Image (tube, rainbow, N blue to C red; front, side, top):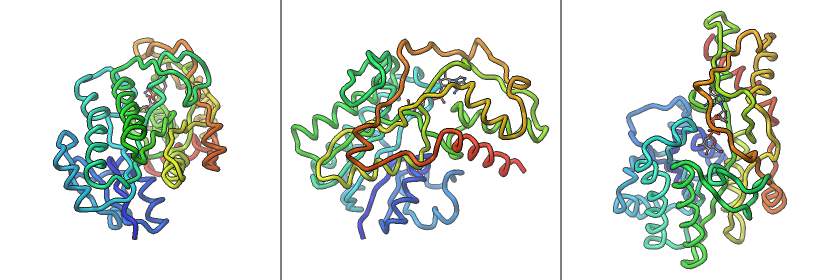
Length: 318
Ligand code: GDD
């Protein structure tokens, strides 16, 4: 039985990937910050099928021990500070977790077992003030937040360990990916949750930032499948994981409220204080290489995903 190690397994991507790996017959070991803390993303059945361990991401010796004890053939790194709203907070902490911790893992792989296949959840935030649109693996990076800069450091270390140390290490440049397991601080889940509350008479308005902000939003379950495929290839490479289409926050609201039989214009209020500076160039991924080389395609469409998220909120609230 092959063992996969998933850091940050209790998050959105970790829980979807764990389900996929278990269905494929892997033994799944996951790292969390606190094994006693429960996560809404991990059902009781999922919890009973994975092995959870704690890893202090600042500790180099501990990650070496984890690799030696568990002998993973594949490692997926999802542990990160990931909030879009918090991209400028705590630059040093973000640098440690989103950047240096990846260097610790790569060093540990080279010391313990250079045959391990490794996939890093990189981010479209590395493109930041992008120089062109859509963005592919060839597009130069211009991060504009400590979050994007730390992710870029990790991304660069992966290329270095691949080219100069010969490791099978890949970077998945992920554009926004969502699901009912997304945190409430992300705009998709905020809209799904609040619109369901309004429908049930538990709230009467939804305050958002810029309704015209656009993103390339896909479904998290599709994106973890791409990352698994990346590690099954004959050669390690980087890939952009995206849909190639953008939608606005307004589109999101329209679909969510319409699904509930409501008109978003009656409930959504734009709050200028919650505006974030807009990107000069639209962030939208070019997934051509990923589709062709991995034989991958996003299966859940944007409107299906929004409706799935709204339905999940309704069910939970009821
Ligand atoms: N969170 C939030 N709340 N965003 C809002 C709101 C609001 O009330 N109103 C408008 N937005 C806009 C934001 O300005 C942004 O343009 C867009 O909605 C999406 O915001 P988030 O859902 O917070 O995600 P993000 O794009 O900042 O970051 C996510 O995607 C990155 C990939 O590009 C995160 O998942 C990052 O970890 C990830 O790297």
